[in-house]
Image (cartoon, rainbow, N blue to C red; front, side, top):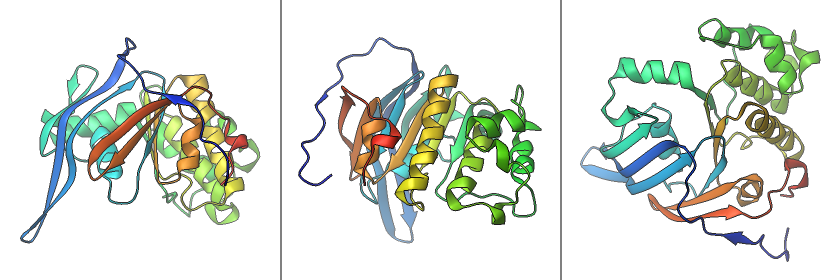
Length: 250
């Protein structure tokens, strides 16, 4: 993409859509011995129902910390985070566990599949604890792996394993998908297939989807792009024209 002009963008004004997440004044400070590390420094943010958001920034910008707080894997040092009418920043561990189980699908850079289970069985682990799951077969079809259900992880490529991880996440029909560098370990060809699967889930299920990445090209498939730097939101903009994953070049 060298020598190409950046895609035209515009800054969002006030939005009347339903906010799934509202974060206000969120800070996160980690104490490491006598040193305090400020990972987030007063973040205000809203994520809206059904949108596809990319959180963009360099390593150390705070994007993973923010995603973990939105996902109930961590709590802020100060400030408030609401999911619907639930105050996540005041929730105890039992409430956060229930929130993660019933509402959130996670995708990480590493696939975390159980090697002794087939792809179908890995997905079934989630369907056994969800309230209203889709079948493992339906979830695998959604990510384009209907013909790989009975393969073990060692028999799958990296991109296929990541798509199994996507199927596992979407099988419980989450209202939110939180993805931490989901293509970070993949080449462009397999990365595009994973992004295709995430876009399809967003389009067909209306799942609010947030992807964090340091790869600026991926931002071109988003409804909105949120830039973080030094623990703060640096800028927010919307793509006037979204690209499909197949149009990306990196």
